[in-house]
Amino acid sequence: MVRAIVGANWGDEGKGKITDVLAADSDMVIRFQGGSNAGHTIINNYGKFALHQLPSGVFFEHITNIIGNGVALSVENFIKEINSLVERGVPKPHILVSDRAQIVMPYHILFDCYEEERLGKNSFGSTKSGIAPFYSDKFSKIGFQVNELYDDVDALKEKIDRILEVKNAIIRNVYHKEELKSEDIFNKLMEYKELLEPYVASTFDIVHDAVTSGKKVLLEGQLGSLKDTDFGIYPMVTSSNTIAGYGAVGAGGIPPYEIKDVITVVKAYSSAVGAGEFVSEIHDEAVANELRKRGGDGGEFGATTGRPRRMGWLDLVATRYGCKVQGATQVAFTVLDVLGYLDEIPVCVAYELDGKRIDYFPSTTKLKRAKPILEVLPGWKCDIRGIKKYEDLPENCRKYIEFAEKAVGVPFKMISNGPKREDIIYR
Ligand code: GDP
View (tube, rainbow, N blue to C red):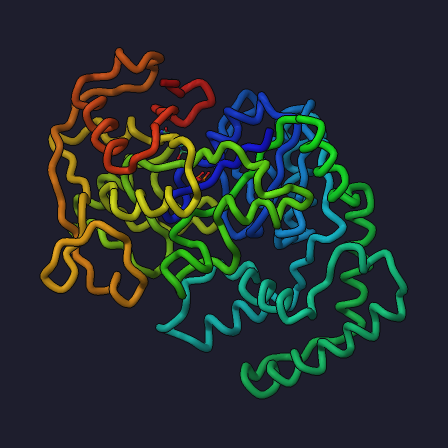
């Protein structure tokens, strides 16, 4: 049985926590896309952790964790994260790296930085982790798959030379920075080869066997629907597909029809990092600041970058679309406790586009002109953390949940009312 956990919004919905909750009941957790450019925050018995590269199943000894072929693998971050878990008392995780995963090269990070610098005020607000240059190279067929490290050394050297010819021409003529040396890149790859050796496996068969023998497999997505390269707010998206459908590709060895449950995480209000369309954004700085300060666990600031997140009200148009794009079978509704301070809670129920009311999520050029149509719901004015049963939630809180559920059209089966593993209400 394969389940996926993915985000319906701009990311930071609290997928890490929900994955941590569901991982306990899984045999395998697989990361299928993205790199170490975003983070999951997980709070459990061992403490508080921000995972960037590792799957969220690493806290459980019974789980096989896998870095799938669709992932952008930063070897440095991968090793650093494993070491930091072990240093903090977590048993050494069981983790495998697909031999078809590709490696984020040092020059991908440089190119990400150089390009953002060149673009100046038109920059993408990249996390500068090399993700866009990485995926560009992957699809230009000049990336390095992990298995290549263990192959013919001469072939590797020849490939590096060939790639650097083009990279250095760009560095020289466009960025005016210091050129790359083949030897440095080769030495780096040899370093990676040694570091990765204990983890590399032909995961295709391992995953395929797990799926066909009925093991419980969890696919873990990064970011959310609205950051998907195809379905998101292009071009202010990430450079990979964040949708569950891509899980069949990026996790490796999973027939598409095996993904039975798509748990889509929806946040009770909105937040976004970086530039891009965000119709329900709160433009009153004082109101946004208050929500940012109270949001998540200790404020809405990027888990990887520390950047303050842009804040908005729950956008039901974007969320309905985000759930459709994922093929959501159920919703996990998170950070609801944060809204307990508000007398009234605005939610975005439709958009106004060129003077007309619309209830669909349009493509980016139209989205730029869309304005939010808000409806105001009464707040519940109390702390709902610690509540374990749905019936025990205040009436206005239940009404808020049911209002959103009706608009989205997918059952809200999990309600998260706090950052900890046990802060969860099942319906
Ligand atoms: P992810 O990338 O989707 O996992 O999201 P992040 O980890 O970046 O952001 C979610 C933040 O919200 C983290 O600080 C979590 O600890 C926190 N969080 C998750 N669920 C809840 C919740 O129900 N209530 C509160 N207050 N915080 C939560």
